[in-house]
Image 1: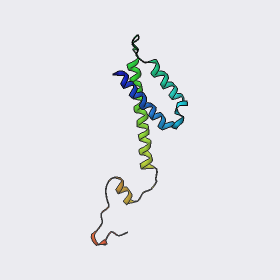
Image 2: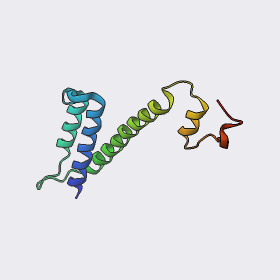
Image 3: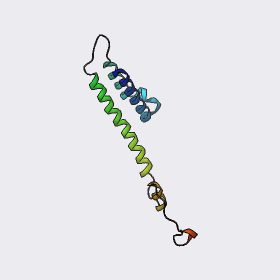
Image 4: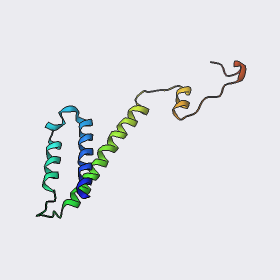
Length: 109
């Protein structure tokens, strides 16, 4: 069970690294360090690694950091990258519409 969880975390961290660094992520120091740490903390039939739970927890925290950073950058790009916005666009951004009067009288542009 712990091996499957560790494998899922390992793949997720690699996915985040690939998203950050592109297709050349396998030549990065982060990739090398991550692969080395996961290989060093494997549990075998002869050896039970005491630090495996700690390493798994550390990798889960690192994964959370990478995902949160990516989502923060996406949100920042979506909401803060365009500069000044008009009232119509701001209203749509928060899920509202500006009121209009039937017949086109009163609040015309």
